[in-house]
Image 1 (cartoon, rainbow, N blue to C red):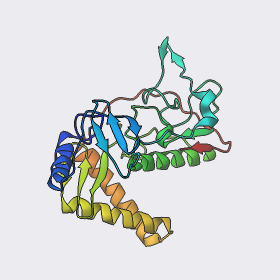
Image 2: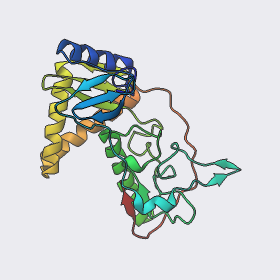
Image 3: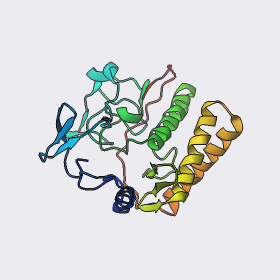
Length: 251
């Protein structure tokens, strides 16, 4: 890992638990360095360390497929300052997740990895919240009703979205994050297993499983933004863009 610790985007306790578990199972960790080049069956790190590898998995993530909007990655100016409520890079959006650029008419909504870098964590949970918020605003857009900013629309009116995540450590252990609270061990693994089963059943259009999944997600979000929430951050907000025209969504 190029980071000095594991799970660097999560609280330190998560990285410590993961390292302890991997150390216990005999996994060698190379922290604070990246792969610089490959020579035959060897990898050379940025620190000059040579590692023999029979199988190599490239787990470096990917870039969002946003070629359609390449020409729209402009940020408007307000009072001489750049307007970008959710960070930099990616597609500029307003608080309603609508594409925010010159000539935008409010019919394009942005969610998931296409959102600006540094705005929200690029996790499946966050993408699910954003997709729900975008879908709600699309319906409002079509019916002429007022839209609601993200994340207030899916976080019980709060302006700070919670950080909820599961990390698997094989079958019987894992890490669960709720904002700055970390739970490690079999309980986290069980939670991840139940979540995955419910998601699979939901994808198969099982109504009962979908209802349970939705209820658990809502309860988790409510708990995270109330009992485990931090002080809210204010987000800049423009006038609502409402249109009755068909909407196009990108993720």
